[in-house]
Image 1: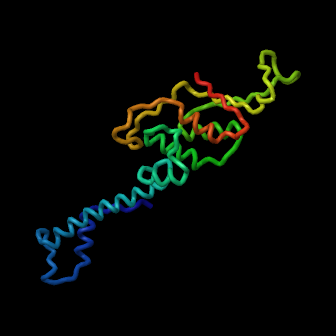
Image 2: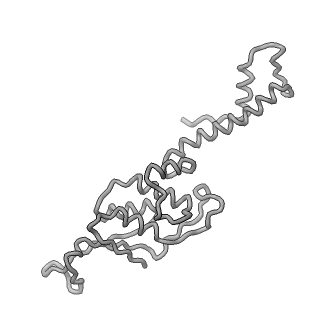
Image 3: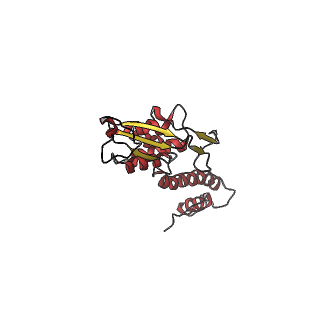
Length: 198
């Protein structure tokens, strides 16, 4: 079922229909009453449109007007995004934190990064063990059990998108600061993350 869309004319006709009958309630388009209803109807049309936008705005991936509410709910904005993040970066952080269910697996880190807008691979290390490791593997100590390599492109480009970006934002931004900051904040305290860019 589609949501009904009402115009200012629809609201003006509805207001006229609610008025009592009689000479003191003129229905002519040039009457003062009709002009007042036309002025009010424009406000009702704008409010109706905003209410319909609220339905899609309630979802984190589409939000614009409710973005500050989502951010305050999820502890954002934070220093990870820098002093002036774009709407897309802010929205990606909201989605990543909202969908974050926690974890310590490679799949968890990959999915979290994807929600932030980054494509990464994860490599887990282990210390060298006779009979299990291959020639050429690094020796490493026990700390290699807790070391992960996050591999990402040197610069992840976020391009300006009509409908997702706002006036005044850069046409493209590229950096991995948000990736490093956010993944470091969700990493277990005993682990070491290495960020490797190619």
